[in-house]
Amino acid sequence: MEVPESERRIDRAMIDPRLIDPAVELVRRAHLPDGDVDEIVELMAALHAWHAAAERMSAASRRYMNLNQNDMRAVRFMIAAENAGEVATARALADHLGISSAATTKMLDRLERGGHIIRRPHPADRRAIALQVTPSTRRAAREGVGRLHARRFDVAARMSSDERRTVIRFLEELAATEDGGEAGGLSRRRPAAPG
Image 1: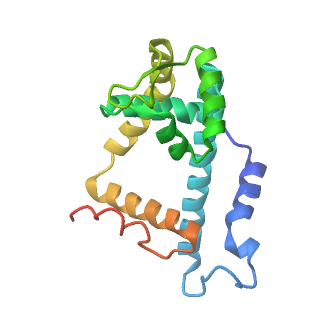
Image 2 (image 1 turned 90 degrees about the vertical axis):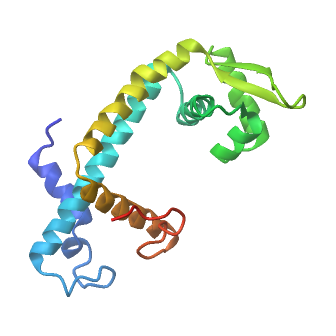
């Protein structure tokens, strides 16, 4: 999708520190030449474009499957649990989504009425119910989200190992900024790739 030039300029103005922080009160950049700032702005613009594209693709998948965002996350969780050989339960789903038991029950009722899930007795715990995605919903998820993931995987596969490690480090450090973390905030959770 081609973005008009005026929209690109406005998008850039929202992320270029020379425009949003001309007095250098927030973004430390005095040590960077303009060319480096240009590259960083270009990187942030690409990240913004990826985020917008991911949102559009996610919304299209949800519309295709007639699910809201949390419903789609629940379906993906149940499919992943089954693929990993685990039994998905309401408690595990509530923990994953960060919602209450009551909200989980309401969502599961809706998903069951919509023909997306089946509740079965848990194979090892008589107090729990096992959750399973119906074959038709699994197929729909595979056609939508599965094909999308395959295209994303192909993009990463075309990169060199060094490029992937650089992107991983960048994204982990970017995610760590959420909690005010500095560089390497998430790398403590997962060992760095050899190299």
